Amino acid sequence: MGYLEKYISLASSFGAKTVRAVTPDDIVFDGRTILKCMFGCGDWGRGLTCPSRHGALSTGEWEVLLRKYKTVLIIHANDKKTTQKASLAVENEAYLDGDALSFSMSDCALCADCAGNAGESCRFPMSARPAFHSVGIDVFKTAHNLGLPLKALRDKEEEQNWYAAVWLN
Image 1 (cartoon, rainbow, N blue to C red):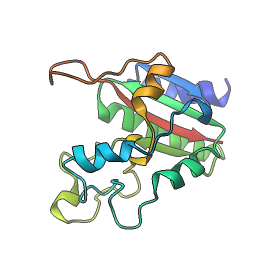
Image 2 (cartoon, helix red, strand yellow; image 1 turned 60 degrees about the vertical axis):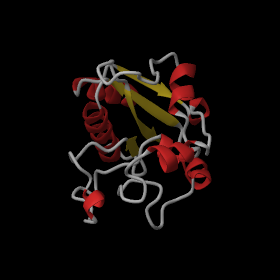
Image 3 (spheres, helix red, strand yellow; image 1 turned 135 degrees about the vertical axis):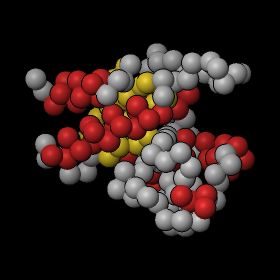
Image 4 (spheres, one colour; image 1 turned 90 degrees about the horizontal axis):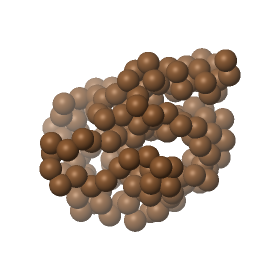
């Protein structure tokens, strides 16, 4: 079994519905996504994985860095915690396999309420990761281009689709 098959199997073991290997060229970068963070997120200015935090990279800086990777493992599930746990496990396994710069990206779901909202330090700084949209990735266009489900929800009872990625060399 090759590395990608191993990582796909690992992510699936955490409950991922779909795991797909793509290239950075398959990811749609659009810095306008930051506008949804600025004007649509109640955590703006407080969230510790938020692009508003002091010293955060710009969306353009993120794009330059992420385009250096060879493979992006897209992980899809119906809840945020599943995608984050799966992506962190794959990142760790890739690191142990010698990919020292492997990087997991997922909307953080480690705490019920982000410590940043209370002005505290992150409780899990080694595991907290930014969301796609917060670094300039259009997750809707990316998912649609890959034939993966994602739509704006009109009701909280509708099935959610969450995505994480592991960037690999």
